[in-house]
Image (cartoon, rainbow, N blue to C red):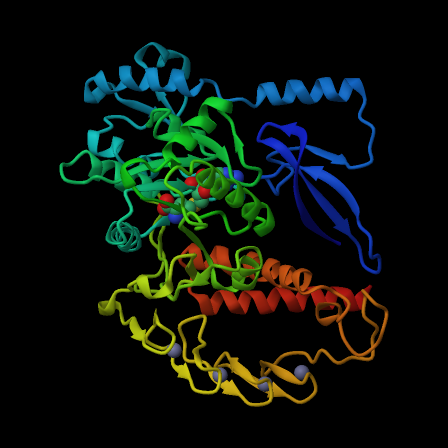
Length: 480
Ligand code: SAH
Ligand code: ZN
Ligand code: ZN
Ligand code: ZN
Ligand code: ZN
């Protein structure tokens, strides 16, 4: 049984805005049953919203749902938080207290005396909320993976080098705060607006600097006023060029994200005064390389850069392995690839034929006429597959394609779950659209590999884990 997003936000609300339509499919059935669920929380524990598409909902359940939504609102509004912050910064150091997620003003201390606090919060710390706030790591959906300094600085230099003066930071609080803290110094003219689902940022930023936003259903929690703030920000007066930078959670649904980003891009286009000459709003979408085909499906004008985006563990966590690990995370952009200059001191070089910077291990293949490596390692060309493949793969005559040496051949006598014919498995069923198959591959990889890579566990052990759990699944199937 697996679930897929149909990608349409509907009119039914959960605390995180309009719910999304999903489809539950079980083996052997073409048509799945459709249902609405929270757009942002994959885990029913975090948001219990669930409704079959064809289900009639009773008055009592509607009332209960409204109550649930009311009870799941933040304790203060953005406006109130801004006011509280003004009072907070005036307090002497010893009285600057943060309780997990929220400022405590002296009058509130008593009430919260049995909770954990962080005291003596310095002004430097106040400028770095992403480090100060307790990470929402426990929640699958809100997982916060912060850019390593090197990567964040690289992104900012790249953005300013390209002449952008405004950054729409969608789910990139670290980049936002780097821009904010530089903007308080002289001679730095870049501005940033943060759109993020983490409402705690409203305790640090005004309504002109932060909008509480859900990028899975393009929902502005602050309503029309917040939408207007965003629209104004995108409006390029005096030639201040805008770029959108986004780093969504990888467990996210690509189609839902793409649909929201298209709406933000349309918002930019609508502000057109000088005429964008049919251009698109420049975008950096930061995402793992194995989502390439999915992203290009929605944004054919995008291409993937070789730059490996690195992450830090949160300050509250111990650092994992030292030394550089290979990050699978890349930048997807609609800007001309040759303009994206990658650091030569990190081994990137310019391929004059491909007209883009590539990683040091990425060799130009004469047959494919392209630098074909996706993961930074040197790939090899397979004449039978007519394409370059991972260095660890070999051509399997059974499967008629390249695969890992110890793979289980796809050609089996068993029948396919989807079409019922013999000779292949569900994953390679010709009756399935490319999209769907890719999506399943995405799911497997992202669940098994990514979290661990981002958490600082090296890729090889993550891969082992992936193989291991896949085997486990297979054994289970045999038994049943
Ligand atoms: N690397 C980035 C952080 C990426 S982590 C940086 O260092 O700036 C993903 C971010 O997306 C987090 O800030 C998280 O709060 C935000 N996020 C998660 N789900 C979201 C959603 N549904 N809508 C908007 N933002 C979301
Ligand atoms: Zn090349
Ligand atoms: Zn090749
Ligand atoms: Zn091959
Ligand atoms: Zn095989």
